[in-house]
Amino acid sequence: MSEVRVATFSVSIDGFGAGPRQDLQNPIGVRGFELHDWFFHTDVFKTMHGQERGETGVDNRLARRAFDNVGAWILGRNMFGPIRGPWKGDDWKGWWGDTPPYHTPVIVLTHYARAPLAMNGGTTFYFVTDGPEDALARAREAAGGKDIRIGGGVSTIRQYLTAGKIDEMHLALTPVLLGEGEHLFAGINLNALGFTQIEKIEGERATHLIIRKRRAPTT
Amino acid sequence: MSEVRVATFSVSIDGFGAGPRQDLQNPIGVRGFELHDWFFHTDVFKTMHGQERGETGVDNRLARRAFDNVGAWILGRNMFGPIRGPWKGDDWKGWWGDTPPYHTPVIVLTHYARAPLAMNGGTTFYFVTDGPEDALARAREAAGGKDIRIGGGVSTIRQYLTAGKIDEMHLALTPVLLGEGEHLFAGINLNALGFTQIEKIEGERATHLIIRKRRAPTT
Image 1 (cartoon, rainbow over the protein chains, first blue to last red):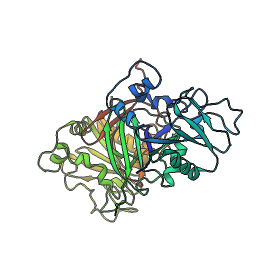
Image 2 (cartoon, each protein chain N blue to C red):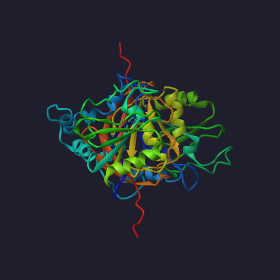
Image 3 (cartoon, rainbow over the protein chains, first blue to last red):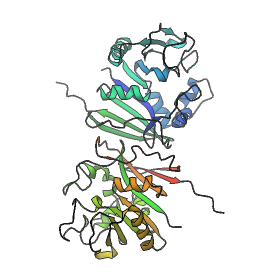
Image 4 (cartoon, chains in turn red, orange):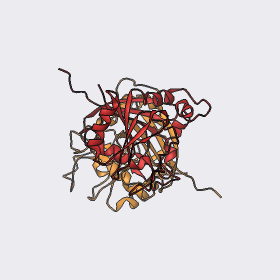
């Protein structure tokens, strides 16, 4: 069954999923890259970026699994880029160069319409202006029965989470204190949202926490 | 040098240090005991309570270390008991029976004066009504050069933390989602408070996170 998932989403010890003051130099906010240090060492990341081989342990296995069976992605507009307000032309094509790491349709949540953007490697960005619910319906259609991965950022995840749309979240707890930034769970009652299953897997550089909703019994 | 420490303080994955609605049946709030499941399995806990021997791995080693070199404790009034408002007589002697696990002077922060309470095993509760700063001064005096351990609860820790008084915190991250309760770090900027050193130790049932302030250079 198709699921809506968050995967390998890095959070600091104090619960931040991004640093503050995102801009062109700080795509994940100030000090945000530190959250992803564990990922940068993995073979998944390094081969994705044409670098020499990386580490192939537990962290890498979980990074790889995060891409399994994903048929479509949803990204918030700020995860796609640092531009606020109307698009200034079509120059901005995301942070990821000509061949983004998605290789599927990617729905970008935005208030500003823009033509679809086909990239190398099978990624096409679709800019959706009718809100998260519509974006999810579009992603479901595009995913062809596979899972939908909510890529981020924090605000997008929080929207889908509080709307009860997310089935599974895989968090990578990283030994970093950010102090400020975007807090992933502040004010959200994960218990009331139905998350009860917890799996904890210790990686080389991150502690992987997988939380899932209890499944409705199939009758 | 004497330090002010928090040790083996259990927090849920979603950052709660206690459940909601503390009462006589729920000393750590509803579902609060789940936070401490890892501790209940340790040999330190079991021998402390006269039970058969417990587990002696990493969790136990860290539980033991938490008591090392502690000369005095500070507890918030709600950690001492469920009574609110004025003391109703001297019947309430804490949650811990005749021989509390402290074995040192214990300063209890309260708005209501009460005579010191000497228990078996070297624990004496002193009830201090002149606020956290005074309580810390009293604890320092009582500790005789050893460390002061802030036992909790969450609100007491947050007061000393934001006042910049805590040197080290050892948190035991436990695979539990509480959803509601007392959040340990919400709105607190640990980075701005000077916490930069992070040690992560994987135990059998908890992930131990030790955060420390950078030390002022000794000149």
